Length: 68
Image (cartoon, rainbow, N blue to C red; front, side, top):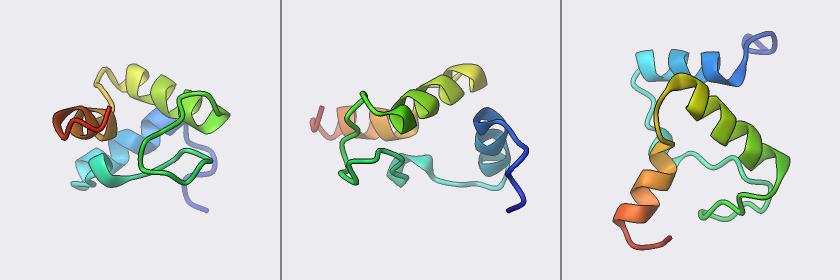
């Protein structure tokens, strides 16, 4: 578990530096493509992206596709 002591925002930054495509990553406990925005996982993901200073690429993609 190499990331266990890192903040979620640090993990995001590491992934971005490696070219990770977060627009297709799903964190929501519902397991659906569209996040519920109510569970703790959604809250932590949103907070991490705010700390990074970017909008969540998953949300941006879903908006662009007209899914939300």
